Image (cartoon, rainbow, N blue to C red; front, side, top):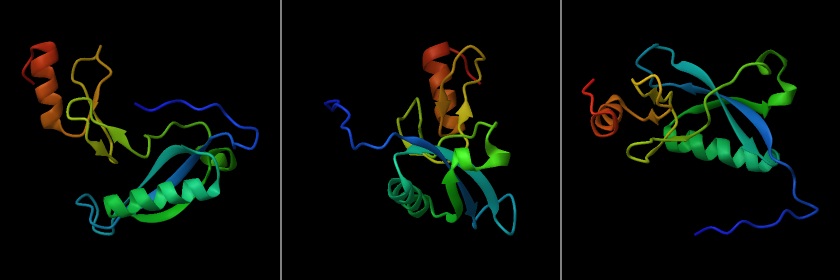
Amino acid sequence: MTRKREAKEDDLPAEKWLVAFRNPSSSKSPEGSTFVREFYAAGYYEAYDAVLTHAERMNLEVLWFREKRNCGPYMNRNYPGLEARCTYCNKRFGHEPVPCADGKCESEFCSRQCMDDHAMLKHRVRT
């Protein structure tokens, strides 16, 4: 069980950051696909660590990362988070989530199979 700690005077507030990646082994594009993700970090070094850890884990190339407030053309758009957790299997993933087929359900999944299994258990529907 994780305990919350009180904020200290010298703690930096978390800022929203954007990162652009290139997936060199993309099946959609021979030159690799590029995409943007957003995440929170308290400062440059924390953001740097989060970006490189994610890139290494997912086999991606980092194109750039910046604080969102300093990215004019990206300010008014929402991007998927850097990492998400599958509602069904609780696995971490870093790609576009698969939404639940039931329009009233807000669950997101790492794969179509997890979405199908969720629908079978939760909604009693086979998709």
